[in-house]
Length: 80
Image 1 (cartoon, rainbow, N blue to C red):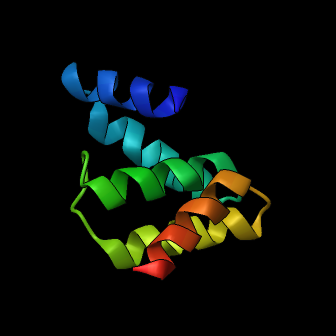
Image 2: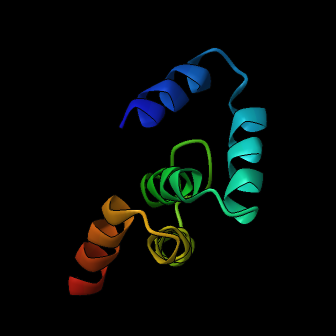
């Protein structure tokens, strides 16, 4: 949650594209927390195009890497 708030602050100062790209790269390199953040941002459409399929991908990747919060988000998406 702290990183989401921090990400939103970054959005307001105009540096969001770089921060989001760094988070995405970190996720692809295996950082489960950053994958959860990318899932949150993509699901909400904050700084990136809203895309539930991509959000599902990021949550799944994060969950697989051990992030329990991402597993909960993934389960809530799968229920809908």
